[in-house]
Length: 85
Image (tube, rainbow, N blue to C red; front, side, top):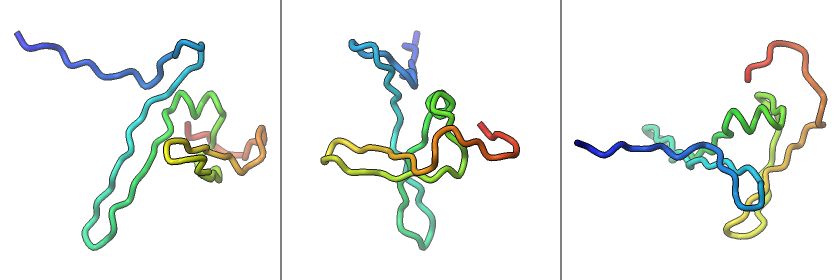
């Protein structure tokens, strides 16, 4: 009998009661182009933060192991139209 392979949950609670979301850095390799790296935001996290597709964001490098994702748009402002999340 083969052992079952378990996927890690996308969110786990740590010992401080905070919810942590785990994800992998993805590489996109296309012919004739440099490799591009992407980080996807888990749907549960995006929904909890009321993030919208196309929302402007910025990465802030705190040190070699810490990044901060800064939302540049005003919070709570909803754009008219269909919600994609």
